[in-house]
Length: 378
Image 1 (cartoon, rainbow, N blue to C red):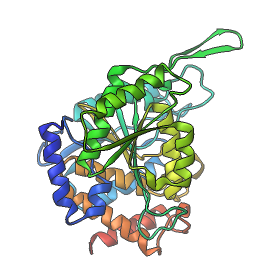
Image 2: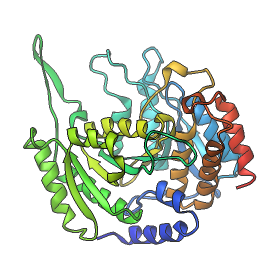
Image 3: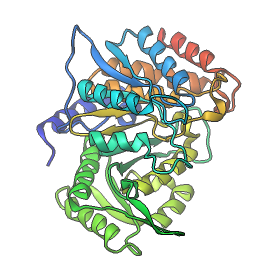
């Protein structure tokens, strides 16, 4: 059963869908019992963490567009970096966590995680675990007017954010032998399954697929799969199935239209969200968020830092803008969310102003300016 908040949310989404079906279905979050921040002085205070790589550039685009649309948001910006040599990284990370605990709401770029730094946990992962923002949502959907290999792709990847292989529990028992632990618990498997089913109901989706590797990891993924099916009994109106992650990866690139909502442990979600991004045009256009009981953090759904194009004015701010639209819808600011996402869609559909990743030659600033111009007409 959905909570009273989820029922109200679902009713709101249905009413919005009559006017803007694409936008409502694509950028709504399940609100169930998630805490919603309060206004102060007529504005919501939102923690802004630009992130590494292209983070500053796309964050500036969001700030510019929000200001132009008079969005009632005040930013509390915290500079955090996972790059080596960035300075006071741990202090900045603690500051960002404190800000999110205080504001309950954040917009975040991606923080770099050095592969070679021994013992250094990803700040992205550490933040999700400390704040218990347990559900990651990546929305994989074709953008009208932007042709990709597959058409009619409209799926949602929901990954458990706080355990699995990302638990950070590994050690070298003897020289040349490393043991890495995967943690799966019934409680967290049940929680993410309930979230996925509630999300499906609130967004008018009809099918939920559990992704797993229970044929090999019979205890860990077996528990995740069996818990999913147990929870599914409480949602008889939804179609339910499960699929081994190997097959799901193949099916995603061959016939992605068969999927609607997909729920899975942490590692598989990281892989499939990247596959999903490739289906619809790349990481620059996929929005996402991380939801918890008390904190919600919105960020691009495909976690790429973009160090190779940092400072070149080539970054595509679409994923960050649409993640910002999801944030606004979470706050009930649907008019602003619809205007910004419609303007972004319209610019891409026209094809005149596109960043290099979408086959164009426009700069980040030019793309942002085109959205500002479009805001005046949508």
